[in-house]
Amino acid sequence: MALAQHISIQNDTRVNLPFLSKISQTVITFYGRLWWHTQAYTTVLGMMFLVLTSLGFLSIYWFGKKLTQGLQHGTVAEQK
Image (cartoon, rainbow, N blue to C red; front, side):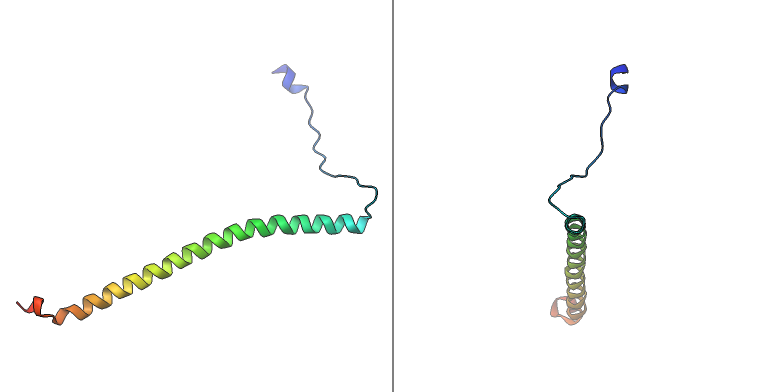
């Protein structure tokens, strides 16, 4: 436990590239963040699309089942 207290981790994620200007570093950072957010929101929106599509098919199935039950009340099988 004493050994773990003396370990220090540097959390500096910046990369200093001398040939890039401040504007190009800002653009690269912007596109990196945009890429990360795009991937995250694509996953969330994909799951929402699947859920809504499933609910749509379920409602079509339910409505079709109710419609066919309503039409079968006057059949010959029920009259016997």
